[in-house]
Amino acid sequence: MTKADILAILHDDLKEQGHLSAAASDGAQAGDLRLDSLGFDSLDLLQFSVSIEEKIGVEIDVDDIPKDGTLSDVADLVLRLKHQ
View: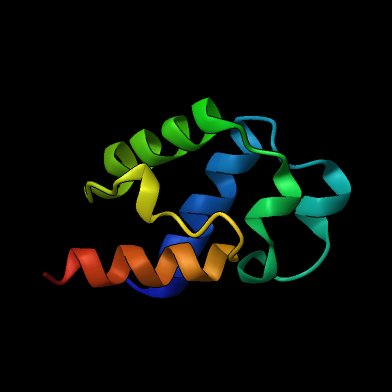
């Protein structure tokens, strides 16, 4: 699984959960999307973490998700954890 594959999965998941408007999903590259722009609360982050585990098979602690980072940062984290 490549970083591009992971980004696509994460982006699609955010879209499915209603966190992306049509404009946001059609705009900049998926990796450039900043998590802090999504207005996540703690429950949203938990759901995102669980979704990553279910769809990619990597257990990720909510506290490890870079809340002020980009989707690309999350993909990098997932790749690191996947290769441990």
